[in-house]
Image (cartoon, rainbow, N blue to C red):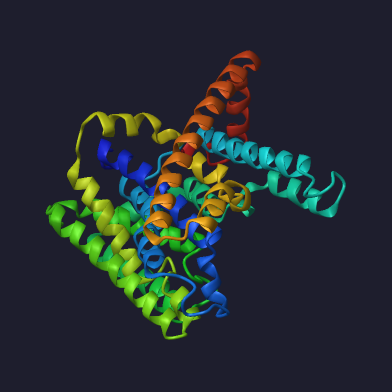
Length: 359
């Protein structure tokens, strides 16, 4: 039996997307990812950026965990609509880049981008992994539910060894640094296992808050020390999604909101807009353009309190704009669907797939 979704979790999903946006600003606009190359000076990045990034980087893991905790039960129609949404935003970006003359219509780059528009899961690694997880979720759920407690525990240990030992410690190509479907599947399973054993889990919200704060601070401290000791590549390595501290921090933050189960105006509003949250990721896929305003601002305002405040404020503002844009897109698609009777087309497309009766 799946868990009943609460309003606090919808609020968490909104917060997580804001955290992902802030993380992308730090690693792309401010180029923190450059520490992975090893060609950076020891005083180029302040501790405040490492600290904020450490508190935000757990967000992707948390999304997969939440999906597992509540179990994905998307219908075929929703999978088709998710695919159409990804194509739509990539095509908008294609037009933006075309009309801004970043490439010409018949150039190789243009044709390559159009190919990515048609097959968006090759462009969005996270959305690609999530999309595949949606398709396979009914089979994954049935398989996990068929295992007894002992076998679930053994599977958790096995996947943890694969994700952390072979993936994080040895940087195995099959797992890498967590930017893979397999790691998303691992976090999904951890979420399912926590839901199945929710009665045995501590209910102390302060405990989970403390774990999240402690693990995030530990990641920040370890990454910054390695950076200052001229081991910047190792510093970037610590920010892998399958870093055990980052995994633990994501689980703790999710359980904090799950057991909080708060209801109020903010949580209720978050529930209403949660259906548009994934669009924030899709719209902000082009960091060079999307983060340009905040990057230019911080080039002339390098005070660290101002920089950190700018990242947070811009992340909230960008989140709000993207939610509004996707709300308008949703209304537009609904209107077009009514006019063209797309409901029947969706059903026909879904019936083409042999798994449609399983979803």
